[in-house]
Amino acid sequence: MAVSQTYTVDALLKKLLRKVGYKGEIDKMDVYDLKEEINRVLKDRKCLIVLDDVWDQEAYFKICDAFQSNQQSRVIITTRKNHVAALASSACRLDLQPLDGNQAFDLFCRRAFYSTKDHECPSELVEVAASIVDRCQGLPLAIVSIGSLLSSRPRTHYVWNQTYKQLRSELSKNNNIRAILNMSYHDLSGELRNCFLYCSLFPEDYPISRESLVRLWIAEGFVLSKENNTPEVVAEGNLMELIYRNMLQIKENDELGRVTTCTMHDIVRDLALSIAKEEKFGSANDFGTMVQINKDVRRLSSYEWNDSVAATAPKFKLPRLRTLVSLGAISFPTYMLDSILSESSYLTVLELQDSEITQLPKSIGNMFNLRYIGLRRTKVKSLPDSIEKLSNLYTLDIKQTKIEKLPRGVAKIKKLRHLLADSLLLSARDENEPLCFEALQPMSKELHRLIIRGQWAKGTLDYPIFRSHTTHLKYLALSSCNLGEDPLGMLASHLSNLTYLRLNNMHSSKTLVLDAEAFPHLKTLVLMHMPDVNQINITDGALPCIEGLYIVSLWKLDKVPQGIESLASLKKLWLKDLHKDFKTQWKGDGMHQKMLHVAEVRI
Image (cartoon, rainbow, N blue to C red):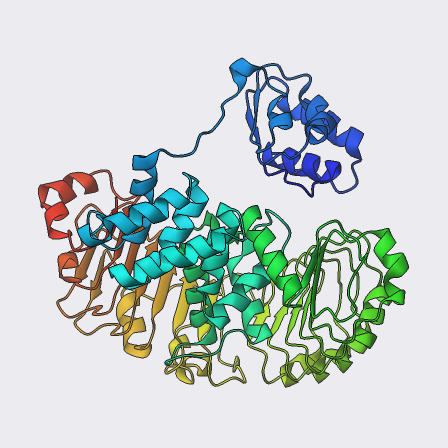
């Protein structure tokens, strides 16, 4: 559990209570109640509790009595401060040392030469590489950052020596870590720099949602379509580039290995905040106050705004404000938001996730430039009719709110690309009647992504929602619906331009067949929880562009998919939770040797 510099005691205790598995209501608990509940939950249990990145002893003292009745558990504290480490006896302290020369050079090579088989440094670069690594003084963050930077540069002695000279110059002005991170930042393109600085607006150690970040970058105008790729695809690429360069870190992956949340290392964030302030990019206020806010600020974020903000907000005029990110606001009355909106006509992004706000003011309709509204997990019950005036609105996120009905005028917002809600309710006459999508006709003629859960009527693929979007529909995820005996064949004949297809929890024939030339553009195919399937046949010529094939929880599948070795473009293959005899069949057929061209195989 991350503690960091900007903790509050009740927030730490609430986080700890959730981490140990408590499912009840905690929002109204005070510090005393939280400690009592933690003691109760931990009683008679053995737990290893890790308090990460503790900056002062007071943080530990304020929460330690939550463990007082639990003598079987152990607490590990990580810190970079000696006086915090002194909380433990010398016998219980582990002082981390810098990497030695060989370890440092090995780590550097694994990053700088990640694309080569053995990660070996070419002989002509060994000397300059050793000099660069030596400047990192055995610090892993510095080594990985400079290695990531050099991995994208030409492998010539001249280029690497120029990098070494640049590093020496930076080191004369900053400490080791700061100098190397500064170099990494200036090596980014202008587009990536904006994306990177934007992440500093989120609180320290905050898990940033990949999907939200992508939509925010697009709303800000940082990302545009490139080479027939949608802005979303370009933004995803930017995110992975920042992760690879060690500017962001992966926090969580989903079951298919895709990034779901990421974080920014606090040292990296310090650099980003410093640059953001210097370049007047934006300002982050982790302590929930609005003190010392420059009236010319363009992007403002705050975490857990409190009553003091509500009291002072009417006094603030922020005429240049483009982005307001308020996460988990404890106090956020409507008049406060109304005041900010009335003075900030250039506002483009309004993110109020997890805030206590209960309604949006009618004046929201006057915000002509607004492209993003985020209300996820707020207490908002309805949207004002004036929202139909937001002709530039791109994303409206109302997931996990109390909103049950949208204003009719939402249909007039022609540029709306992402409407995120918990559900779309279509009523049938009885529970066995399949859903009919015949009347569902999205106004956009460029529907790219479609997710459907539940039964549907026969002939659905001939309805407008599919027929009118066969060219543009790229992403299709289906769960719990009946497509007949041959779902793959049916979809392949109607939707040839798909790049992503997921089928989950559906019945079919015992054998799935992918015919020649099926899904010519498909890059990812996911087959999950299909209880009837015991065989898959891949005809030569099928899936010519496939990169990821995930076959999971097909419990009757006891044979190796026929023709799978012919998928030359395949990069990832998952075959998990299949029939108990599958692994034996895989080994018996010598598939390990046949699939050596696939970079990642998980069975």
